[in-house]
Length: 416
Image 1 (tube, helix red, strand yellow):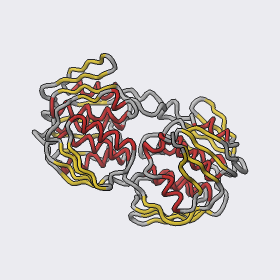
Image 2 (image 1 turned 90 degrees about the horizontal axis):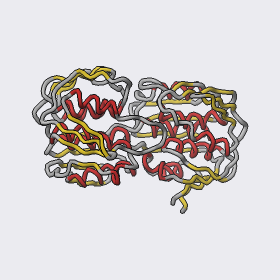
Image 3 (image 1 turned 120 degrees about the vertical axis):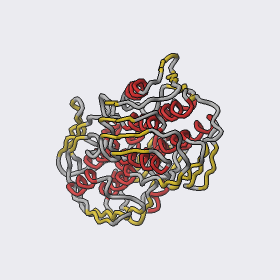
Image 4 (image 1 turned 135 degrees about the horizontal axis):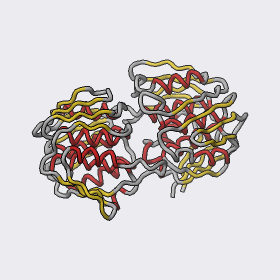
């Protein structure tokens, strides 16, 4: 099993190219199930989760051609309407094949998903929405089995804001009969990116970027070309790394308009940021100041950046409070950070952090995707060597992280 060995204390300097967004690419790949025509995608990240999704789609009959970050998908030969447990147990995003399969083929059998153990994230919102659109759904033996001769438009109000739920129901609604209204829809940039692709494929969607999506169903969708948006979480992770260890790094192929809250918090921490349309320069020469925040749905502070900012707060000047409102188990990295010398206590859904003068390297274990990234940041700032185990979590969502960090001066390497 691969591990990362990091010797901390190295300032970072140079350029890093940001990859396409994992959380945009995965639903976009599933959108290929909605048409027999070919989708031409670019800026597709080289990630374990993307590879897993492509394997699942190929098993269903999807034809794929890949050249670096370019990918062509053809759904003309789909002949298996099942996502088996063996294929999807490591990735919750597998649920995103459910809506497209039922909408286009009238049936789907999808295993209940797995993935990071950061919370329950139930799929009941997906099921309730599809039932409202006329699907008959049973759950048996760990599988969701859905049938519908033809989905019908409906007004769907979800009990909670759910990104994958919004994406699943949005894709299903594009081929449903009549009008579908999705109330309390997720507004994340990745949802908007999917909606823009669907429109390019011939879907009729109003309210893109808002919490109310109105979809007029069409008989069929066609092929399209689309570029996956930049990964705002990868961008934020590298920004936090420079803020923690100091340096001068320019992030390229990224966007500032979808990271506003995190950028504001970095400025509050003392980071100097300058930017253009597709780049951000981050400069840090002093010890960061502690910043408190509360995670919430977009456009609020992203839960996927909570652990990385906590790593920054560990070595910051002053104390901070971090409240997690999205996932109930998303403080599993705290115990590992404390092994490096951090001073973090937990009270319910709030972490109370007292900044320390220094962290000291030690063996630690990654517990989920973003926890992995936070441990990398903490290790870069620590004295001595840190060995991070179970980095397969990191490979699910970060495209060659150790190579990108090495190129700007970090002492980081993969070991077996």
